[in-house]
Image (cartoon, rainbow, N blue to C red; front, side):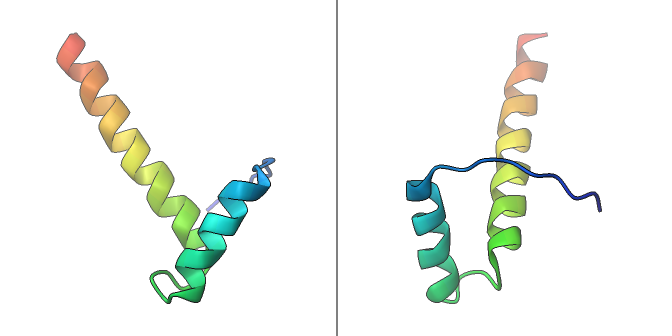
Length: 51
């Protein structure tokens, strides 16, 4: 895995922290990985349908 750095709005961080504190995810990194995975699946699927 590669490490990247990004700036995230405070409101997003608060939401991520709530998910972790509710034990829905083990840590913030996992929340972000799942969110990116789901976004890519959705966007790439939409892109392929247009082609």
